[in-house]
Every structure is written in C-alpha cells, then in structure tokens.
Length: 460
Image (cartoon, rainbow, N blue to C red; front, side, top):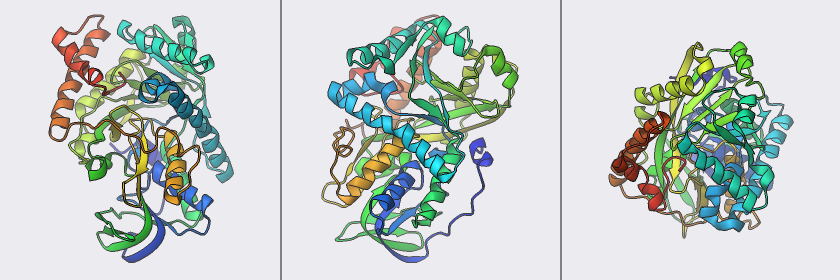
C-alpha cells in the first residue's frame, strides 16, 4: 500500500522533530504542496523573514505524494465555477490559474529538478449516455464566455485517435494541462525550501494553536511563537474547528500497472494525455514515463471529522472499483498486471473549489478544499497565502477564492452518515448507467439530493 511514487522518488533524510522553543515570523503548519509553496513564496517576497514549517510526518508523504499527478488549473471546471462565482468571477479564477503551469515549469527548470513534467492536453470523456451532459456543459460554458479554445469538443473518433477505447463516446479537450510525478515534485519543493533558509521540523504535529498577541503553537515536545500562522493541513483540516463545517474528507484510490509500453502503442495512447470520465465519482487515468498506467477512482470512504484512519489507505472495495475501472474503460489493457495499489484522503468542499482566508480577529490564515485537484491550484494557493500573511492586497487576494463564504456542510455525525448514504446511492446509479440502464427512482433521488441543495458530491 506504499505509493509507488514515494519509492521511485529520490530518498530524503528526515529533518529532526522540534525539541524546545522556536520563534519565527511566519509558521506554516503542513509540509505538503500548499505549505511548501507558501513558505517559498514568503521567502521570495520577504527575504529577511524567518519562516518555519512543521509537518506531522514527512513532507510530501500525505496527499501530496499519493495523488494522480494531474497538473492543471481551473479551465476544466469553468462550468462549475460559473455557478459558484458568476461569469466574471469564473473567468478571473480560470485566468489566474493560467500562471500555474508556467510557474511550476520555471521552478523545476531553475532547480534542475526532474519532476517528470509532461505537458499534454487533458481529455474528459463520456463513457455512458448519462455522462454526455458533462461534456456538453463544459463546451457550452467555454463558448458562452468567449474562450472556446479552452474546451474543444471531440467526436468519438477524435477521442479514440488519442486513446483507442471502445467505451469512449465523445469528449472535450483541455489544452493547458500536464502530468508530474507527484512525490518528486513534493521532494523538490522540500529541498528548495531548505535551500532558501526555511526552518523545517518533520514528525512534528501541531497539537494546539493558542491565540494571543503572538500565536503560540504547541507540539509534542516544543513550542513555537509566530507572528503569523498558515494552516495548510489538507484533509486533516476537517477536524480543525474553524474549517470543520466547510470540509469533509473523502478517500481516493489508484492502481498502477507494470510497464506496458507495447499495449500503449497498440491503443495509440502515446501523447501523454491525462484522461477523466464524466461519472459522479470519476475515474482518472494517465501514463508514466516508463509506460505504466495509473487508474484512479474517487469513490473511497467518507471520513468522520478530521480523523484520517486506515480506511483512507487500505479499503478493499475502493481498490476493486479502481481496478474494475481500468479493465472496463481500457479493455485492451486486460492483460496488464496491476503492480501496486494505494489510497489517500482528499479535502472536499461543498462546491469543490478551494478557499483561502484569515480567521476573523486572528493572524491565522488557511487554505483547503482542493477536492482532488490540488497539484496545480496549490501553487496558486501558496501565492495567495503568502500574501495574506504579509498583508499584501493585489489581484490574487481579490480573487473570489479568497475570504469567501463556503456553504456549510451538516455537522457530524450527519455529515458522515448522510454523505455515506448519498455516496452509496450514487455508486449504484452509476453501475446501472454503465450497464446501459437507469437506476431506480429512489436511488436517483438520493444521489441527486446534494445538487438540489446547492452542494456537490463527486463531479455532478
């Protein structure tokens, strides 16, 4: 269950846990993508600042080292962004996201870091009639907002020319996308932060954050005084009181095949395209530098509060769904052996967009809610959070992602019980759709309940 990404990435020597007292200007809690981008940006914008990072485990070994490595901004979610932010806000967010890929490219080239950055379009495909509407909605939103080039419709033949599967009915192409080896990126960020003079303590969880003229953070064997604190702890933020009603934790699972370059040649999937389907609990799939295929399923279990337990790392039914997705969507790969499988938590907001802000009356800032799309947007999140901590107001802090009102989720245990009921209904409906049938009316009503309430589970 150890992610292959972490084993393939360069080894690291852990930084020591905090012992005793530490005083910094800025403390970042969380050593994943968001926390490390924030720390680096703080050092860039304020070179004299004392910046510290604490991480509960090892940097990048949480969600940042477990994900699918899909790198893109917000053009693929433009239709949803219109509902969340209006036309102007949606365009502002999507246009801000166009800096993500160049920013990560520039970072990796400047550092000489091989993060397996491969720039290629992402395809969203329909694999059942019920998924056609998702494709149409993406194309229509881009056309109505005058950015047709950001969501190009593809016929079934055009999709299959890039990846020949009999399941693909048609699709939409998003051009501004790439893939990375996620653990390599996380470790490159960690190395860059250390080289920039950031003080890093691993195996140092934040146990308590006390308010006062200066923030006081307590850890198992130390205390940190910091003028400003940034909380960037991903799915664990669902258990942090200021964000508990805005987040829930979902499990996402992947399977990874052995190298099968000859099979990829057979189906013509050699251009590096990343692919997602239009299910509620989508499948996401990509290739690697050595010809492996990763297939993920966002249908894992729902957490209780911020508790991240073994269900997020080793859930057999979720792994089975990911492998079933591989065999169904890419039948030509039926002979490819699954070499590794693993899972991890994702932080999900009610509308599936991240949010950034400052706790009212405190010098504590936060970023969360990437909802499974954090590899790219965490770069933007680091830019925003560094500016919030420094008190800088500009076009990034004016984005509708910042200090926004996020629709609250129900309290526990209703959040988990209700979410589990809706998840189960949605899975059964999609199983019926895949078989060319309609789910029963009661199941469809339950699965559609979130959207009726202005909430989202999965992609619909």
